[in-house]
Image (cartoon, rainbow, N blue to C red; front, top):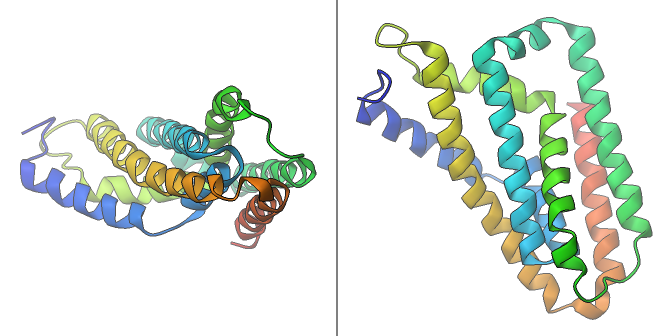
Length: 203
């Protein structure tokens, strides 16, 4: 057993987590759009940022802060609109971006990672999902729930990274073959960012 969790529980959690990660959502859409704009490595870097954002939400959930956000409508709404505003900013910036320059992908890896992190960190739906999902697999009677949540959240972020990075890398490889259409691809990515923002507001 690890922190009070047996192998069967951890295996069941991993299976559920991978199944959820394989279902395209906002994280996958963001990494895919990043890959289209910056290439395979940018898609992978964006996925890493998204995973770091998930880890942040896991820590907040373990500390009980996510529950406070969920219980405070004003805080939840503020975070939701802030996240949507950031995504709209990315949409406008990407729409206006010119053709990619040689080597721009390598220089932009840090930015892709940071954007992935901020986008996920400002999404209250991720916080609520983690708050609802992780406790289903904890066993408070066998060990501290907060430690188990950190372990499970870490595993979820790691498996999520590989799945999301796969989507981002494949999108980047496909876009590389259309390098002459960078301006058009930028607009496609901008629309995706905008759709994620609208979905965040409407949900």
